[in-house]
Every structure is written in structure tokens, then in C-alpha cells.
Amino acid sequence: MNRIDYLFKDNKFAHIFYLTVGEFPIEEELEIIHALTESGADCLELGIPFSDPLADGATIQEAMQEALKRGTSLKDALVFVERIRESSDIPLLLMGYYNPFYQYGIERICRDARERGVDGFIIPDLPPEEAKELVEHANRYDLRTVFLLAPTSNEERYRIVGSATTGFIYYVSVKGTTGERDELPRDIEEKVPRIKEITGKPVVVGFGISKREHVKWLRRFADGAVIGSALLRLLKEHRNDKERMLKEVRRFVSDLCKDDAI
Image (cartoon, rainbow, N blue to C red; front, side, top):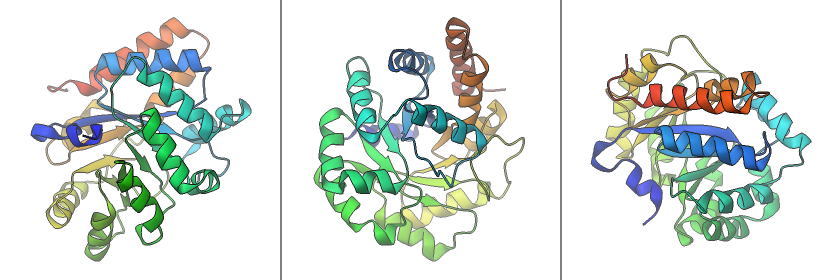
């Protein structure tokens, strides 16, 4: 069974954390992942570096630039997954823009991803109408596909995205790019249950989530939350002091993952 299928078992709320592959040297990045899993992370999104990440704000863009300076590629990300699998069974999703996947070859990336321990894909710039090849090969290799809905999506769009999604639906909480926000739009509380009702799929909320208050609120009606920029900012702040950085990661993740947050 695919690890994503266990993520929401028994109505569990999934705490999903995003990292850009190659922002740090591989051994250091493995230590960060160990700190994340040890502190309560339920799933990881591994960002594939890309030179023009349109959906991402400044924090993730900077992380991708660091990774690109190291020459990190999609192939390197697969090697990284192999290293993670030496010590962890946590669900892993590759998140990136379509061009690197297309250049690699869709069937080839599905086959290689499956062999190395990936569980699915999130490709923000690939609409479900153009994802037939990816979905077919992902299904063949027992990988899950995750598509996005935005605040501007209507109910017809909910159905289209729901029919192509085999993992969970990623609901983008804000109009704009990734990045920390002080407040999340209150209409999420109405939209997420409606998406779940129409699609029958779990719905995870991402973009802007950075605080215990956000996660506690989302637990009332969503199936999970993605935390990206807030984690990357923390890593950047302590980049020159690894022990302090790992300590802060453990503190931050444990805090967000507490069931009785606040």
C-alpha cells in the first residue's frame, strides 16, 4: 500500500513539511529530515529546484537558488530519496514544476521514483486537463497524484481536480505566492468542507501557514497542513550554527504538531 494512503487513516491530521532538495549539503539535509521526523512530521514534500518557481515567494525562491548553485537536479533528488529510505519510512512527495519532470521523461520518472521510495507528485503548474500521461504512469507505478485548488476555483473545478487526484487535494489558502502570513482567510473554513463533500478526497491546506494558531484552527475542518516558508526561514536564520538549527527545528515542529496547540 502507498504510504500516502495511511496518512489520513482514522481521521488523522497530517503535518506536512516542505524542504528544497539541495539547499544544504546532503548529509546536513539528512540531519534536518531526521529532526523533522523525530519531532512529529507526518509527511515531507521535497522541492525540486527550478529557476522560475512562479508559485513560490521569496523564501522558497532563495532556497531554490541555493540548491541550483550546488547544481542540484531531479536525478539528485532521487538519490536523496534513496538516502532517506535507509532510515525512514515517512511518506515522501516530490513537489516541483513540470519542465524538469517532462525533460526527465514521464514514464521514466514514475518508474525511478517508485524504485527509490517516492510516494507521489505535486506539480503546481500542471493542470489536471494536461496531466493524463502523468496520472496514467503514476497509477501504473502505484504513485499518488496531488492537484491544487485555489480560492478562485469554482465547484466545477473542484470536480475536475477531484477526479484526477489519487492522493489528496492541496488547497491554496491565499491568492498569491507561498510565504508566511499573519492571518489566513476565514472563508477556508467553508470552502474546505465543501471540497471534501464534492470530491470525497482529503483536503490539505498550504500557503501562508506558519503558526500554532493556524494549525489548531485547520484541525477543525481540514485533513492536514503544509508548512514550508516558515521552516525554511528558520533554517536560513541558523544556517551557520548547525546544532542550533537542528534544535530550533525540533522545537518548531514539536510545537506545531501538538494536538493541544495553544
